Image 1 (cartoon, each protein chain N blue to C red):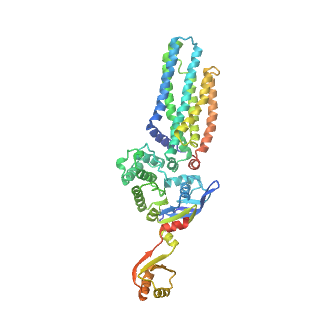
Image 2 (tube, chains in turn cyan, green; image 1 turned 45 degrees about the horizontal axis):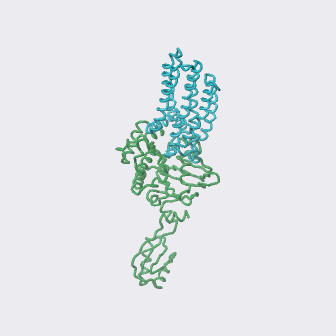
Image 3 (cartoon, one colour; image 1 turned 30 degrees about the horizontal axis):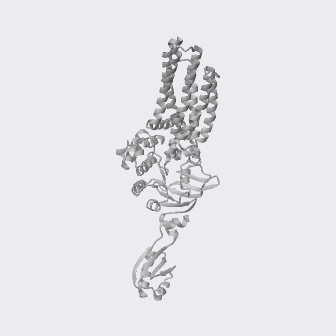
Length: 245
Length: 309
């Protein structure tokens, strides 16, 4: 397997994305807005002295940081749809498959293209979020809340695994859908379980602390491995040319 | 590589999709430097054959070798894809990227080094008259220009064999001519070309050898051989008046078949250059007055319709 070929494919996709304003706006603006909006809410709550305990405050911060996991899953779907269905719509998939490139190299290239821009954007957003939160909560808490182990697990495990989950779902969806918007809408269903986790955290049914994050990561890893197997079966030359709709 | 080496060797190749047979036991070969045309109606199996030979889809049965490599061998399939260039029926360019970037991307995937890429991109874009527009997004080009870029894309790595799947379909006459002229240039460079088409005129002008496909390979040969396979040559002679004396004189020549209608004789001949003067002399001897003599030859269209119907 020649990894550089996958990188060539991903780089080409980055060049295509740069020309699509809707992709740029979604990938850059949404995490940026979230990274400013969420600290603003927290800051307002803290400054008003609304009787929230430090434990409740920490729980709220953990829940809010989980928003970035939801974003990682959601934004990756946007990119994955363009990356794969875009090739289908423009009929550029056949000449690509005719090159001396293996199915795995193409799949990996497409995965890089769908994974890297959103995850980098999420990391930048999380960076801004952490700095602003620390700035706004230092007086209330008396210490810098970030960085901590909880956010480290989100950055290293939960967000990337959620993003990979979206990439694989995108590959599977691409074989059945012929329209970028339809793929994006179907792909957005992926955020339902993540949103469910967030709500359970908010209502106090589960804690979105370190242990929960590790359990969520372990479950996602298993699902990712299963979906990876399905996506490699789906992403085969003959399947793409003869069975993809 | 030796001249006349077989570059595409196909033996009883078949492809089934479920119960449907798309290509049925097709056998043919294409020599190096030859232009082979695959003629057939829509759904005849032309694209499926090209896809099998390009190692894009698997065969159901039979064998095929490209420059000696087996299409069914996984290791060979990458080597085959390196050796060939494919222009599919849809151009499939990246519309947001410039002509240059489209070609550069494929040059990289075909493992051309930077110098080779730069030289070949400039060579082909200049040859196609697009060098000045190299930085224009491919989406802004006309259909004919896009098709030319697609052909350049397939040639960027200097392949030994070029597969063209209906390269002039949906193009206006001027664009079709542009593409055809370009293929003729490649023919001069002795590229082995496999051309799928249902444009008979195009096949006749470009191809050295033609195969007529209708799921099964109905016939192969040079355009002349295929034309000749429909019927032999016919000589048409318009007389002022046909009478029994003329017919008696002609019957003495032991000709294969004579039809006359409205003072026009249509005579089957084997060797027109040798037989026509003898026929005309016999008519004149019998007192006939010849108004004109013309030759009636079967066309590739006659051959195509005979085999496809």
